[in-house]
Image (cartoon, rainbow, N blue to C red; front, side, top):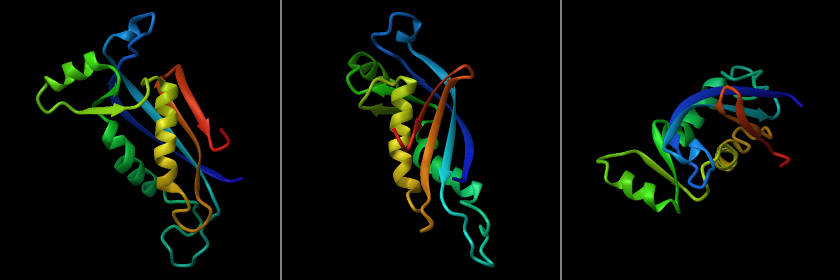
Length: 149
C-alpha cells in the first residue's frame, strides 16, 4: 500500500479535570498532527496532480479548513467541565471549542480522525482514504489511530 503523510502544527489549550497531577490545570500544547492518506496514484495526463495520491497542498488546505484552523489558538473544553466553560464564557471573544469527551491526546486523536476521515474519503474517486492520524501533544508523547482501529 502506498501512502503519503502531511504534518501540520497548531497551538491549543485544554485541561484534564480529574487528572491526579498538573494536567488538571489550564495549560496548552504545541500539537503536531500527521495525516497519512492511502489511495491509488492519479494517472491523468495534463492533471496538476498526475502521479500523486493527493497534492500535499490540498491535504493541508482541507486539514486547515476542517480542523487545524478551528482548533488553533483555541481552548479545547470538555462539554461537562462547567467550571472551565463558565470561566471561558466570561472572557470576551474567547475562542473555545467544546468537545464531548475529556480532551486527552487519545480522545483528541480519535475526534480528529473521525472528523477528517469524512473530509478525505474518496476525494478523487481513486479510493483515497485517511489511513492513519498521529497527534503529538509534546515531542515525547502522542496518540495514533489507524483506519483499522
